[in-house]
Amino acid sequence: MAVNYKELGLSNTTEMFKKAVEGGYAIPAYNFNNLEQMQAIIQACVETKSPVILQVSAGARKYANATLLRNMAKGAVEYAEELGYKIPVVLHLDHGDTFELCKDCIDNGFSSVMIDGSHHSYEENVELTKKVVEYAHAHGVTVEGELGVLAGVEDDVVAEESTYTRPEEVEDFVKRTGVDSLAISIGTSHGAHKFTPEQCTTNEEGLLVPPPLKFEILEEIEKRIPGFPIVLHGSSSVPQEHVATINKFGGAMKAAVGIPEEQLRKAAKSAVCKINIDSDGRLAMTAAVRQVMAENPSEFDPRKYLGPARDLLKELYMHKNINVLGSAEQA
Ligand code: G3H
Ligand code: 13P
Ligand code: ZN
Image 1 (cartoon, rainbow, N blue to C red):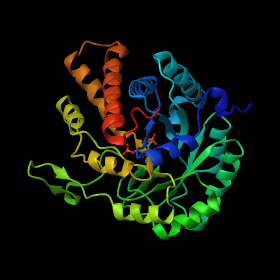
Image 2: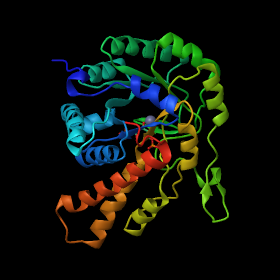
Image 3: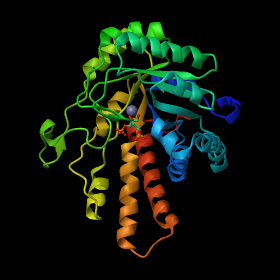
Image 4: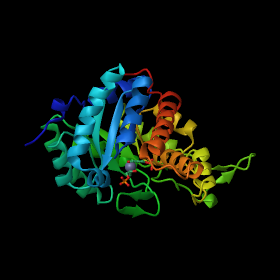
C-alpha cells in the first residue's frame, strides 16, 4: 500500500526553497543511512533551528532497507519535536537514476526526489525528468533535476572530469520539464578526493588551495532563470583535522582537498538553496571511531565508539548550519 509523505509529517521543498532563496541561505542536505547519522542530523538541526533535508541514495536504500529508512524519517519528525523544536524535514532521494526508482520512493513516503539524467543526452534528460515530474507533482512531491556532470563518483557512475552546466540550456530545461530545482556543475565534485595536488596551488602556510568554483556560470544561470532554486552537489569541505585524525590512528587517506567554506558561504547567499554534504560526515565518523578504537583497544561496545562518532557529526553539522550554509535560526 502506498504511503504519502504527508502521513509521515514530512514537508516537500517548495516553501523551504522559496524562503532560502529570498533569505540568502541554503538548506543542508545531509545523507544518512544509519541511526547515529540521523540522530546527529536532527540534534544539530533542532539545536540550530535549521530546516533539513534528509537525503538517501539508492545505495543507502539498499544498505539500510527502504521501510526502515522511511520509518526513521517519520521518527525524525517526532524526535525533533521531542527535542523541543519543530523543524521542517524533507525526505529526499539523492541521485535517482530511473523513473521506477523515483516512483517507488514517491509511493513510499519520500517528499522530494532527484532524477539525475545528467549522464544522458540533453533530450533524453528532458524526457526522463518530465516523466518523473508529472508523477511526482500528482502526489505533491517536488523534483530536482540536473544539468552538467560532476567529476567523481555518483553512485556507480564515475566521471573523470566535470562537464560544466551550459547556461544556455537551463531556461529550456526548466520550462520543458517543470522541475522544482536544478543541480548544476560549477566545479564541485563528489567524494573526499575532489582535486589532485597538481590541480591546486599552495598558499603561504603550505596548504593546498583548490581552483575556485565557476561563479561566472552560476551568475549567468541566475540571469536566465532569476530566483529559481539551484542545488550544489559535491560540497564537502574535507576538514583537514578529520583526515589527520584518521591517518594518525591507523588510516591511510591520501591528500584530500574539498570545497573551501567561504566559497560555499558565497554560493549560499545566491540562488543556491540546497547544499549536499555526505563525505564530511563520513570523515568525521571515521575519525572518531578510529580514535576510540586506537585509544581503547579493549572496547567492544558499539555505543562506546558510535556515540563519540555521533557527537563529532553533530558538531560538524551545527558548524555547517551556523557558519557555512546560514540555515541556523531559519526554521
Ligand atoms: O552523491 C553521492 C552520495 O554521496 C551518496 O553516496 O551512493 O555511496 O550512498 P552513496
Ligand atoms: P560530497 O561527496 O562532497 O559530500 O557530496 C555529496 C553529494 O553531492 C550527495 O549527493
Ligand atoms: Zn550528489
